Length: 420
Image 1: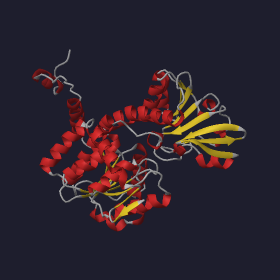
Image 2 (image 1 turned 60 degrees about the horizontal axis):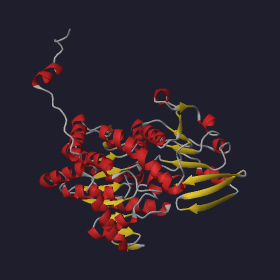
Image 3 (image 1 turned 45 degrees about the horizontal axis):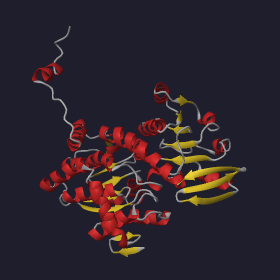
Image 4 (image 1 turned 30 degrees about the horizontal axis):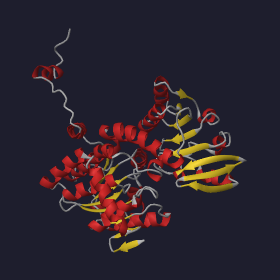
């Protein structure tokens, strides 16, 4: 491990490759680069310290550069033990960015690094999963008075934040970046859909065509995974607890049933719910020989990995990011230790998708600073105009033009008097 006063990464020798990967991502993040150019001119984050707990990837590095272009000081760590790209962390460290992250972090290091970011005394927190916010509220409440607000990237984090809000535990304003249309309709749907299958294929090299894929959850992420699985030739079963989403899945042409009914039928199981123990031992026991399990929810609790480990006669790693469990005489395969398979076994979402998500993060930080002291301590959404701006920037980056309403059309949309 290479360690300095403001960094701890696996090896600084990987920094040149990290820089090349960051450059490659930047070439596909035109919308974020437009925000970066604006930030360079306007400096909306001058003298603001931003503490980040995000996946340390080539795309995230470009968000770091955008925030710094806006005048911010930045400190970053990972938000999942297996999601850091070591070459990117090294590149950031060489640049002088405060960074503590490596792929395969122990639990001890994971929380030690979170506390390095907290010691930076951030004015704004950016989180993916709410661990940074939770740690501050639980162990460092003295910092809250100086915090302007925070931003949350993912569904799991929003669930936790709303639970904090309900309990009266949330003490500073949070922007639900995950709730931006330009985040969850694109990052969750297109990004998770593609990158989840990418991770499973890298881990297993299995043929999806003709297989039965069971998708646990039909939110935006589950919709993306189910659709992409069908596109690869799989037969898809969806499991759900919410009636409206189950009805959507049925009308989208997927089979819908409880997990107990799906367990003996599936070849590949993918959880994307943000909840706990979607796949339990009663399901694992009745699965086919050779069933493959993967999780694309934020935490490693959607599959009961601990229960499967305890019940297993043997466990061995058969290839990178793939473990073989022998449970009651049958083989089960687990991808990426049950952690985010798209990052544990692959590289996460494509850069184009993360461009719009990180536009949301950058603009949310600017919004927090512009509205400091006027937002109460609850979960907020960005104004719809910000979503429209992000979509416009992405369309420009893609070279796509759209219509504008005529004056007559604009007037018609503002009146109630014109009818039949």
